[in-house]
Length: 398
Ligand SMILES: NC(=O)c1ccc[n+]([C@@H]2O[C@H](COP(=O)([O-])OP(=O)(O)OC[C@H]3O[C@@H](n4cnc5c(N)ncnc54)[C@H](OP(=O)(O)O)[C@@H]3O)[C@@H](O)[C@H]2O)c1
Image 1 (cartoon, rainbow, N blue to C red):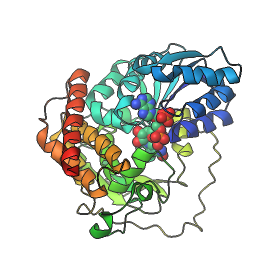
Image 2 (image 1 turned 30 degrees about the vertical axis):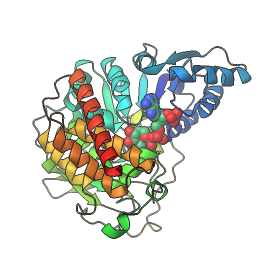
Image 3 (image 1 turned 90 degrees about the horizontal axis):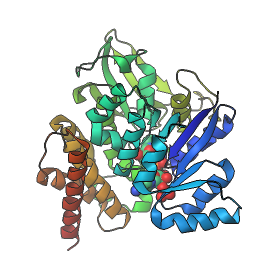
């Protein structure tokens, strides 16, 4: 029977890759709902092609979307709005699979709603898990949701772990013969830049990733290595391991997407061409495998694979994320909120590249950590951290 899919963040890079896979397998999957935020023209084109039952946009974009749909004589798609609309489609009884591909904290409540409704949730929106960690995982257990990693690294780790690893009782230690996880990082566009060179890099340079084509925010996160920091936290939650069992390995070719080391000396790696369609297809069909257009890896072309340790002097964001995970509680949410504000300020050329991590560090030092025991507390702290980060940015600019 055909599976009905809701794509949160359909206009983004992950959203569009998801559509590609669904189109290739239209006999097995149908698009029930899609959501967009600012790219309304693109959203209307997606609606025209895929004819979902529902679409979600911010309320101030409804008129624009209606007019664009009317041009295509489309009047039968229900338009829902804002966060309430995102939650409605995420938990909709007719939906089987939710692709969580909104960027940033805005994806938290819809993703959690999908988890609480017991869906198969394909998790691209790492920020949601970084913020809500234990709450999200407990909800997945309580509501029998299947939370499957789409981030290529976590998807790779998932593929290299023993089967049913996600079902084991967590105690922070690797289990079933696992020794540690090796989380690979491309190193981003500035891997070999000196500190002096990093002072003047531009948003355009930061968004030009050498191996992956991604949204702006994650591209900047890849350039600062905060993306790896967020992924480190994501890995600890998803695989129930303490941060000391996650080693970051810079691997500039992005051919090995991550590895798992075992106590017997084995290291299992998942490899492939860098294309998000592979982890999306894997999470969509797991435990089956489905075809993608991604060409098989040609090892004679990619004959050189390099590895090095990350440089936390030039890329301190990774260290900040590790410290936030060690501190626990609300620290990962504070880190994430400050980073979202700082990245946005960098993209608007209000702060320099190296100031991104300074803003995050300042915010971590000035917002009180505490227990992340409810979503309300997490969201309040997120707001407070955003204020503190914004104030710091104003100070830096004056
Ligand atoms: N791209 C990758 O290769 C990749 C890999 C692994 C993980 N991820 C993760 O996947 C998520 C999406 O990344 P992406 O690269 O696809 O980002 P993206 O291209 O920037 O797309 C983000 C999506 O979220 C929507 N959105 C933005 N702000 C929103 C808000 N306040 N409320 C509701 N929707 C909002 C955007 O809508 P509009 O476009 O209409 O504004 C868009 O559909 C991120 O968490 C990222 O870390 C991405």
